[in-house]
Length: 119
Image (cartoon, rainbow, N blue to C red):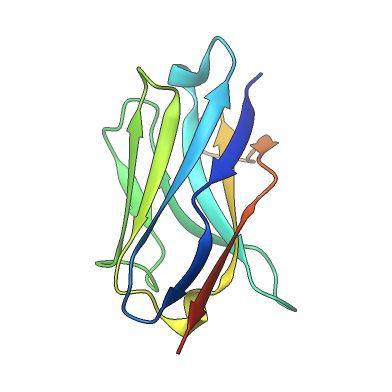
C-alpha cells in the first residue's frame, strides 16, 4: 500500500502555469499506476489524467489535453502534473490517486491541494 501527499497548489492568474507534485511512500510505488483528479466546488470529482506504472502510456481528459502533462520519476517516488495555460475553470482541489491494476477502481488517494485560477 502506498500513501500519497500532494503539493504545489496555489493561486495563479489565467494563462499562468503551476506544477503539482505527488510524493508517494511505500515499497511498491513504482508498480502502481497513478492519476490526477480534481473537484470543483459543488461538482463531482472528475478524472484529469493518468500514467502507467512505467510511464509508457498516458491518458488525459479532453478539457486538459494540450495544456496539462503528467509525468513520473520512480527514482523519487513522485508523480507530477505540469499545468500550462491555466483557465478559471481549472480551479479545483486536485487529488493524486493510485491503483495497482491498469484499470478499475483507484484504491489510494491523497488529501488534495487547492488550485485557484483568477481572471
